[in-house]
Image (cartoon, rainbow, N blue to C red; front, side, top):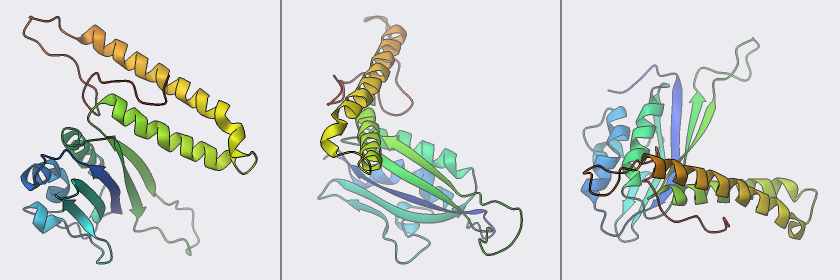
Length: 211
């Protein structure tokens, strides 16, 4: 049901490339944590944003793409709904993608004098078919942020070494993840299955750029 006295306005923003075979029913099920949180009975009922100027939740079957620009009233418990959505989308994503979730404190007033601080918060979530795809998105976003900041002081051509160090860090993280999956993997023929990661499936090839 609608949360009329909710502490936050929560905005979800992102674009996810989907596998070509993904259909509406799969998207509806994957996004169930969102539309149920909004008090809707279906994706069609819950896809509309709280703000008319926002497109809401859009599934483009021709372009195999899911677009999120959607606001809902809520509390901190929305974080669990967002995590559940990401786990569901991992199975449908063609490539890695980032999803931004912003919590706006509806009670905070910048013009009021007082000691109260805003409870605004921002969370970046990631989805992808495997850990390599997710790490690729994380790597690309970090490189973009670092380069944009350092280009205020250095020419872009001078930053190759910085990018190489970022790649090295992600290579170490990826190798550590693969090693942990290998340790937890059940031997062939034992009837078990290998371990997976929290976001994205287990294994996978090394992300590009990470040598």
